[in-house]
Amino acid sequence: MHRTPRLVRLFGAVVLIVVIVLFTALIVDSFFNDGKQLTTLTPKGPSAQTIQNLFVPVTAIAGVVFVLVMAAALYIARRFRERKGDDPGEFPNQLHGNTPLEIGWTILPALILAGIGVGTVIGIIDLNKTEENSIKVEVAGQQWWWQYRYDIDNDGSFDGPRDIVTATEMVIPVGRPIELTTTSNDVIHSFWIPGLNGKRDAVPGMKSPWKLQADDVGWFRGQCTEFCGLSHANMRMLVRAVSESDYRAWVTNQQTDKAAEPTDPVAREGRKVWQALCAQCHVINGINDVKMKENPPPLVAGVAPNLTHLMTRGTFAGSIFNLYDPVNPDGTPGDPSDVAEAGDPGAALLGGKVDTSRVNRVTLEAWLRNAPALKPMYPQGGRGMPALGLTEEQIDQLVAFLETLN
Ligand code: CUA
Image (tube, rainbow, N blue to C red):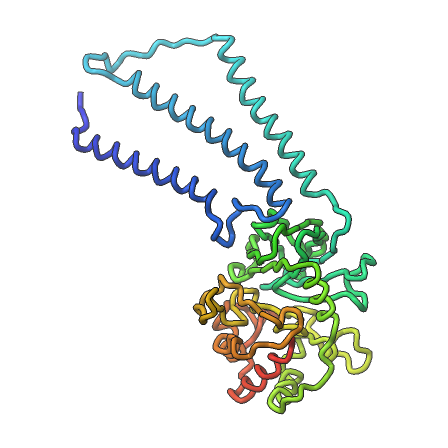
């Protein structure tokens, strides 16, 4: 009988052990991985906790089953392997009809699956329960960013005079349930903030309920999880959880408009450029919003983010770039390419002064110069932002104007 050389067998065993150790380390590490932005394993809100409470025991049971089945298979393969002197033509002894064994291996998996099934149904009911005292927000997917409309006056509609609209980042008060309605303006997207809840598809023409709640102040990253075209991977979102009083200040500021002309002459020129070139797609409340009776804007049906309070956001372009340069915890400038710091808007978040020294001008100007070069888009088809062929002077003027939008 042919036997594999000892060295080859030893090598095989070492490889197997290394693979098992690495795989186990990967699984264990993922449970202790607080720093990863899109980890599902460190829940930061009740809905994410509900999912975790289901995920951990199911994974544990599946893990035990996996180990037992693998161990039994390996044991049997070794115990009954062909030995020296065995007759290679011999057919193994066939047996069947062990009633207790057959009943056992039917009932045990059935019980395990039933247990998981009951837990899953309880979890789904819990995730879909509506909460009192909730804030209602409509989340609409767009190619390739997210729009949020808040029903501030709580009248069931998202476009009352006190209601607000924003994009890319959702600001929520800590400890309050947020009742979401997900929908889409074009293709199917999927809304997912892994730290706060699982995924919910955003389907055109449909309103799907979902909810979020953050236990602590902080920010939480999300990512569109349904393939939706060229920049699907660049369709991110951010939830900022702030204190109740900060939330109220944020709402009050978001309710204001930007009708007033900027005082700075460069920004004033920028406003003209904006009206001539940007206002066909973007809205700034007070300049060209749809509520204005006179001079209604030639809008391309809301396919671009509302920019009224652009500078209150820390990121732009579907949350893939920082609008502000990050600052390290010790106050020194952070790595400008690091979107992990979620570009803290500082005082501007609540409508305070924009710290223009921290504005990420390099990327913002590059975006205005040639947006499709920074993010794959299809502007000819009305998808995404086109390259407008602006002069450097116009870009400077536009940035000066945008910096007034706190
Ligand atoms: Cu939107 Cu993928």
